[in-house]
Length: 258
Image (cartoon, rainbow, N blue to C red):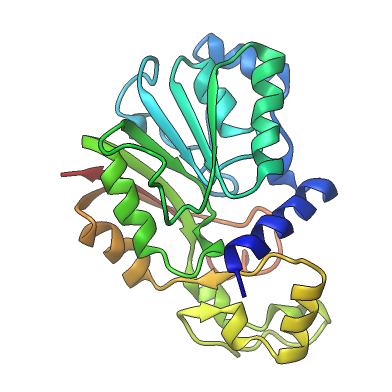
């Protein structure tokens, strides 16, 4: 199956359903950003440390990678960055367009697969902001290589991703009130490890399909692409249930090219 096309349609469904990551920022947040009062998240709850940006973002070329939805891009643009938002889902990009038109912001919008940034020139960005989203592609190493290609020497990659341990549990059974139990292996893929009837239902209902990439791929992949890791933190899901009582299930990294 065409995974990119499926997840594009699935995220359009998420937009229609009001998923929290598809709700664009309101005017007061944009006005505060214009005054220098802003923060963003790569993971569900913890604001990215301001020092991770390497100084003011005003005047810098910033790529918001797989982060459509009218949230990060407009804030960075209001703070003075020259922003490009790249996302697989047109409906998500439409949210950024909505805020840009409403607030008089200039934001370039590009639709595509995060593993293939050929629409973007080599060494054309100073910073890549990549919130949790690479769980929606089947391979993450190409994402890191493409980030390295489009960043200038010394450019920064701010990335959020899932701790792959979360994918070993049968969370669907837990949702049904059953005991939490280990069922799957990592690297994980919905299309390879879900029971056939559950996978067929997800495909039929246009639910997002996910992959749980190993830390070798997530962190080792950044190193192999030519980055050095300069910052790291973990975060909870923010829902107060699921795995939050047991482990922080999200990770953020600051990586620098060269």
